[in-house]
Image (cartoon, rainbow, N blue to C red; front, side):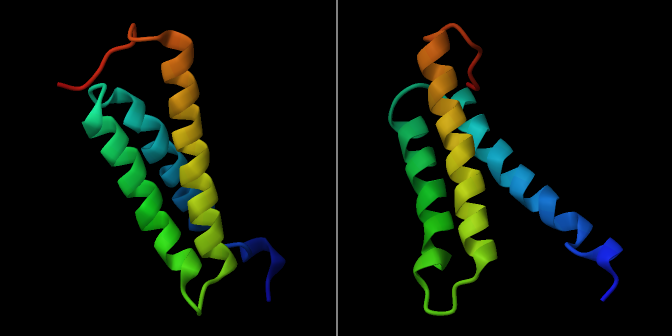
Length: 87
């Protein structure tokens, strides 16, 4: 195996995308829509972790998305309702 090609270059992009998706939940309107989006995304990412054939990648996707949602919560807490929202 060529060590220059492992891990695959796209692997980090998937984790970064999950982190960004979780962080973008902060841009949703305050209230049930934002809470439902955060819970739904975390539930979708947690599903594969509980399968019998789970892999380290499944856990990595959940960790990346969880980190993004955590950053989103911190951003909401630190900025109050002063940052722009969608809608």
